[in-house]
Image (cartoon, rainbow, N blue to C red; front, side):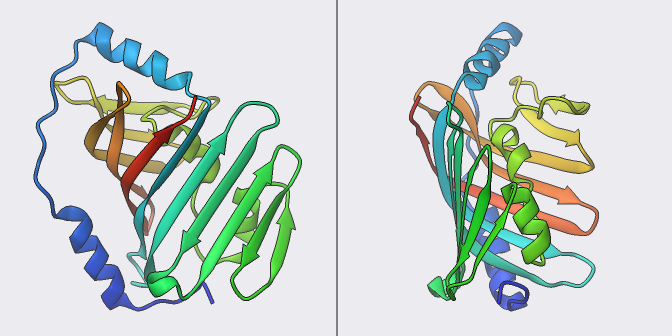
Length: 204
C-alpha cells in the first residue's frame, strides 16, 4: 500500500515546497560557523516535523507525505519516525533502539528488523537514509564516511556529497540560537527526496 501514489499529488507538493519568500541569511564568519557546527553536534535530543515529496525520476512514481522524526541519542538511544500519507489514508510508524526496530503499518501489519534502514529496504518500495539524516538534517556529515562539502559566502553548507547521496540545502532558519536547515533536497541516482522542515524542537 506504500508503493504507488498519484503523480498529481507529487507535483503539487513539489511546487508548494519551492514557493515562498526568499530569506536573506546574516553572514557568519568562519569562526562563528565553526562554533555553530560544534554546538549543533552536541544536540542529543530533538524532533522535526515537516513535509516531504519522494520521486523516482525514471519511473515517475512517487508520493507526498507528512513526516515526524524524533531522535533521542542519549542512552538508551531511541528513534521514532512517523510518515503519514495524503489525507491520512496510510501511516507508517517506525520505532527503534540500539537493539531492534519495528514498523507498524496502518493496516495492522508489524515488521521487525535490526534498524529502521533495514525495515525500509525490506518492506517498502522507497528508501529514506534515516541513520544519515541524524546528521544531514543538521548540515553535518555522517561520521565514518568521506564527504565533499560546499558552502556559501555566509558560511552555510549549500551542498554535501556523501555515501552516493547529494544533499542540497536551499534555506536555513534560526532555532533556539542554532542555525539549522529548513529546506533540503536529497538525490541518489534517479531517487529524489524534497524535505521542508516546518518545525524544529530542540529538547537537549
